[in-house]
Length: 591
Image 1: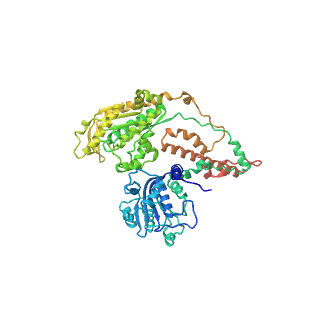
Image 2 (image 1 turned 90 degrees about the vertical axis):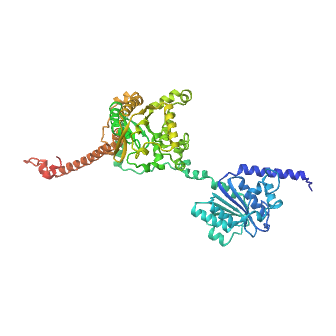
């Protein structure tokens, strides 16, 4: 039966359809990451399908509708309308913002925009630029797009632009939705290798654009082995012989592994590079050797200093890899010795900061301020690591606990500025900061150290001692040496003396009653004491064990050979001595 539709009813249906489309775009289409170039390419005349399709039968409307739907979910977009025989690109950003439409309406929905572009206020060719000129503008400003989407007939200039971008700048997610399904003939076969082609009127292209630009899909593929437990090693049970079963039964007894009571203490030395050579030599050459002997004898602690100066020239220390190494070593240290003079130190550029690995960068962003030097970064890195060891309720309630934890692990020494008076002008730049901004940052850094209560010796004395090995050095560092030695002894006693276990000291590992393979012996007994000796001594122990095993096999073979060559005793004769049966050369192997 005939239905009567009033204008208000049709308007209600239209608003419901517009609302449904807006909700569908907002909830069903994921965002398209990065910068996106959208070109709605439409033919000169309205081309219609021979059969009805889901979006209608006007390719101009379909092209604009897909382009605007894609623009709604883009992070950063550039939208053009292309059409006509003149090959002009008309920017739609200003057109959609109603600056050229002559309306005061601040915003409109998707269907209103499509209707206004195609029918009521169709853009004219004079509003755009030729395709070649637009592409040249992209080249001039080095414009790079992560995604390029063309809906409708393909433009050869856009194909060449995408090919050049892929060749010089990297991969571009280029997608062409051929609405008519006719293709472009020779252009498609020769130059479309960088494009993903979808034919027909379909909205699947929008979901593909969003998923191709999302790095979450790539991360899921990279972790597919973890998600489905594919990285678990596959164990294959091979058939065993009787001899192997006998050895397995003999070796099934457990070997008691001795628990080593040795601990390690990492001492990180932080300072500027050129003005602290004498102080670092004093610490590494005199103070730490005596401290290492005391810690090993009294506390069973192996002290390992971390001085990134050794064997590394100064230019190499100003690289992103050196910055990463400094921050990682500082985060894992137990004691920080901080030497501060009159130089603020190297300030990395922002690009070097951003090139750090993500875990290091995330930790650095907690305290980093633009213009911060590496020395100050190292201090704040150690400070953050120490504060994480303090319980959260103590960090919130009492600053005394925080300062006490810092004073147990961080020892700062500030050199007297009066020590620079006798330095010649030739070397003054190695000891004093020339940049006024860095001077202010240095004074602020010193004040932070004083407020945190980690300064052990303020204005320790020193004087210029000349040039040694092409390096200007200071002297009269006796007060620094005494203060640092006392502080490190007290810190080691506080951190390690109370934690020595009497059970570990009285524990005597029980050796197995059967013979142990030398490789099992190395991993079972030598590894626990590896922290207490230097690598060179460990290599000597391993070499001695390996030689002992080989010599034992040699002696065993000689004894077997000797047993085979011994003449059996007969009646009336005596057994020949072993040395006579083997000869003089064989007897020499025993001595």
